Length: 349
Ligand SMILES: [Zn+2]
View: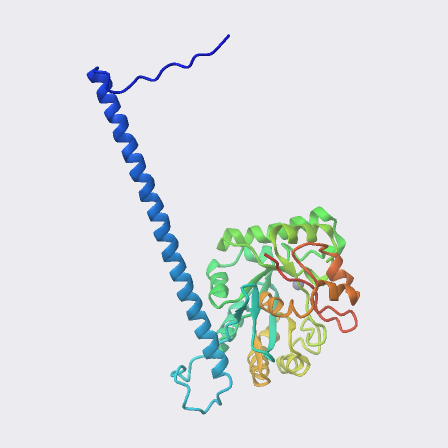
């Protein structure tokens, strides 16, 4: 059986009702065309404004970075620095410049270091933030989800305001080498959920308690799914502040880090230890005097990751770093078993 489509009523056939309908339809078409043209113009306008804003923001960043890099070579007593008129202002970390739009880079020879604080937030965390603010530097806090739940969101917000990075240290400090895949995944997920509830964002990096369980499939799965990469720390510069002689001795703690630090180090500290918190002013000043620039973990990894790529890491036999994320978004960076140089990862977008 053939199908005959119904004929559309033709406009202008003399029927006033039909004529009005046709006119309305024509008017509707005109409005639709005008609306489309308007939308196209609006989109083009928004695109142009966004492009202009981006360009001016980039220029501003470049200027800031260039100014900072230049002022670093000017002696402190120089009067030619026309930018820093307020000599009491805390020193700020040079902003990294963008290298071909991929990852941050610093001027050649810049000594970078990342201070990290595990197990917080806790009663001494505000004091840590005071010291960081005084020195105008960022750090990275690997937080426990169960501590986050009882924390004033303003404290966490203050971390972000000071350009610190927030890391995931599991919900309850569970050692991930001792639990199965599901438990490891849940521990990391619950910590991030606690952060989401407080500040509306997840962690950006993971440090498993005791640096253990890096090969746990639950950790790897979670890290990949959430694009959080894992990092441990350098043993050499680590003062082991959870035991004597560092624990209870702020001066020892500070000097251990100052004497043993090397560029690209990731220093493990705990804001849960009073003596560590009390060591920070001396530690930071000592590192500054040796020319260190303080960065977050992500900034550190972004700055170092192109120094050793995945193939070189594989050639060196850094199998943990490479095999943990075969083909994934994270790859090995400067990990050496012999010196316990730190672990893996670079985000790849
Ligand atoms: Zn811990």
